[in-house]
Amino acid sequence: MQIGLIGCGEIARRGHLPALRVLKDFKVVALADQEKDRVQRVAREFGITKTYTTARELVEDKTVEAVVATVPPQAYKDIVYLAASHHKPILLEKPLASTVADAQAIVKQVKESGIKAGVVQNYRYYAALGDIRDRISIGRIGKPVSVHLLLHQHSPLSWSLSPWRFEGPRGVLDDIGVHAFDSLLWLTKAEPETVFAFGVKGLPGANFLNQVSTMVKFQSGLISFVDLSWLTGPMTFRVNALGTGGRIFSDILFNQVQEQHGHPLPISDLELLTQKSLFILKGTVNGDMFTGALKFYQYLYQDFLKYVNNENVEFPGVETALKTVKIMDAVAESLTIGSTVHL
Image 1: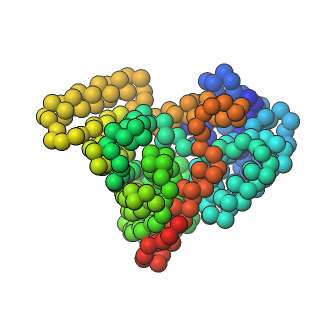
Image 2: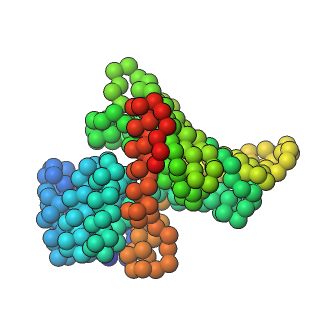
Image 3: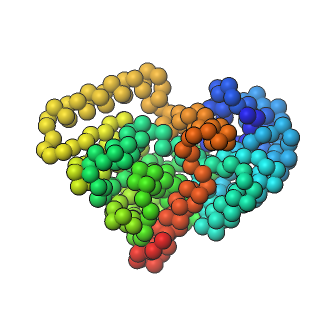
């Protein structure tokens, strides 16, 4: 598959392009970015010959078979329209859109055109997250009663100077909130009903949210609590689930999942400590400890190709991503009005 990539920022340089370079079924044939110097610099870095300064030029390139967009979400509606007009599949970096209206317009355009359109949700590839999902699905903890998801991460300014996350008031919600709420929906396979949220800006002079805590009630009666923060150092990602027949504790980053039925034994903690030590040692040697979720882009692109080719694969399409955008908008509304929002 010959790829044309729009947007040459850090997520393209550190996530998309390194993955595409090593996958034999893909070739990046063109890049586009509104900053001419940047697109030429990145093209030289990755050995790509064709560059453009507009999305339209890239999409109209006949050698481009599929489009990848890694620009701020405000631009996605127009880019999807271009891809659909030329009958080319498209992969969008998260989030799908900055508003529910734009997300709905994208979904409508994709349905009417019949193109394949997916959204990057690389956190789904954490093995521990998939393990928890499987355990919940087969009833290992009975009927799920509550899920607590905690995702803390340092500010993205540590690796990208792209300003779009800080130009509006939503901050951390638009950054890692996308991953958190997609993970929650993917884990539970449940339909959200109401949202209540509270948050803080947390830093002197900050006009955007750095900390958001949200309660989501689902139609099934399941209650979830999602805690997001930029006010930390090292990244933390944990999911704890309680059911009528047991509970699950986890540390997603270190691939640790502990299922409990009754009182835990001390040997269980020792086993977890041993597993974590071995995981850190292996990750340090092979470099996985230093790449985070960027290492999953190869798997994501392999699944995207299957998705485009109508193979049997579960891939986050735009309709799934629309649900996440609706939750995020509800969170923002709840923060504004100080009460529960019905979805």
